[in-house]
Amino acid sequence: MNNIKMLYNGKIYQGEGNFCQALLIKNDTIIGCGSNDEVELLSLDYSKVEKNDLKGKCVVAGFNDSHMHLLKYARELKRVQLQECKSRKEVIEFCRKYIIDNPELVKEGLRGRGWNQDNFDDRKLLTKEDLDLISKEIPVVLVRVCGHMCCCNSKALELLKIESKDGILTENDVSITNKLLNDDIQHLKQLFIEINKKALSQGVTSVQSQDIDDLNKELEIISLLEEVYKSGENLCRYHLQVGFDSVASLKEALERDLYKFNICDDRLTFGPIKLFKDGSLGAKTALVYDGYIDDKDNKGLEVVTHQEMREFFKVAEENGLQVIVHAIGDKAIDQTCQALILQMEKGNKFRHTVNHCQITSYEILKKIADNKILIAYQPIFLQYDLHMAKNRVVEELLKSSYAFKTALDYGIKISFGTDCPVERLNPFSNIHCAVNRQDLKYQPADGYYPKESLTVQQSIDNYTIGSSYQQFMENSKGKLQVGYLADYIVLDRDIFTCDKKDIKNIEVLETVIGGKTVYDKQKGTTGTVCKR
Image (cartoon, rainbow, N blue to C red):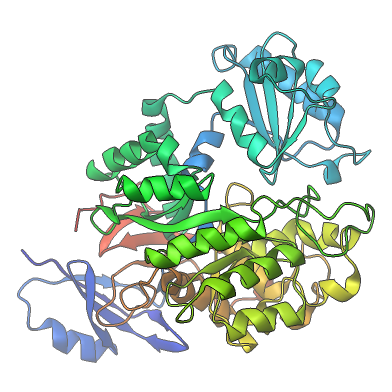
């Protein structure tokens, strides 16, 4: 049975600068667009049409977050959130109170995330001694906001059999701490459903999410995702970015035939291999050529060596797999590009992508453009980085960093995401940072290197068309045109004409996936997504 739906009297953004008044949707796909009269005429071919008067409201394609961690974000819902702590003392007091107030949640130990030494009064890292003041009886692990550094108390280090003078662990050692506090799978499933509701309420209809650090070791996550998606719950379209500890682990997964690209119809799919070249700028583990301003001998951490990266790319190319690489420092980005260029035989046909791509020279951006390498940007990083980056790298390099406009001018294919839970999930905060080049308190007043500002249209296109291109779906998702999936959101104000300072305050009135309403602000509920 065909379900026919007509939207009319709207300002519907179709992508690439085009607008229309009305859409005609058959089941999950757009079959007509144009003026009210044109679409009304098309609708006469059907005996029963559900009509929706938009009353002039603005409609855009649903946002597609090109890199984040949705399941990991769900895990954070039951952990201590430390983003607002302004001192080490405040962290200690906050965690002590949490233990007293939540005895059942901390029986196995306490895990938290979000602290940032740049926000502390003394700007010093947490130490083992600080966390021992929280508790010596249970393991305590507090992860820095970036996810690339954590601090452990003495009990946690004892259980992990790790020797560390200050309790600070970085990069791969951070993930080792996960085994101290195992998640109940059924509880995690429910948290995942809840976090999807939040994403839908903010206009996110698709996510490209890295929630597996090594496929061979975390097959229970695949089972969890399959179970949830087969139940028909309200969920974003989910494209899995899959991590691996080593080239050997990748080869093992391929030999075991673990890559099943359509796990559960087109709503749950396997995506690229996800690798880490370096750490984070905030933790001073990003790989940089010239060291840090306040720590010249420190040039960051190389998580995957140049030779290993070449081997990863070689296996990926041989097996037709896309790779997305976390690279933040200029040396990390440059070496990632060099490794990729050496292994690509017929250009970048698998759309390999540099993720984050923060600290860049114009030469590096040219290299990315010349070799048709994609970039997955997170403009929301400016919320914090515009205050911190000046203390990490020299100003001359900052002028060509976070260079969204230059990258577009060079012809680079760009996508937008949030890296949530590193930053907030809200797409409008993300677009605000891309357009206004300010933090969420509108600083600096004139924008941070404002020549790199994007227009609203460019930002939305990156977030929809660009993100769909990254996952090879540019011909079926990301535009509100004939033949495309009916994934769209209705906004409470016109994002194209409202004061640019008001962009971050925009709210979603309705979210639709495949022609089905999955969030309705007025009703305060979500609907049901049918399987395609």
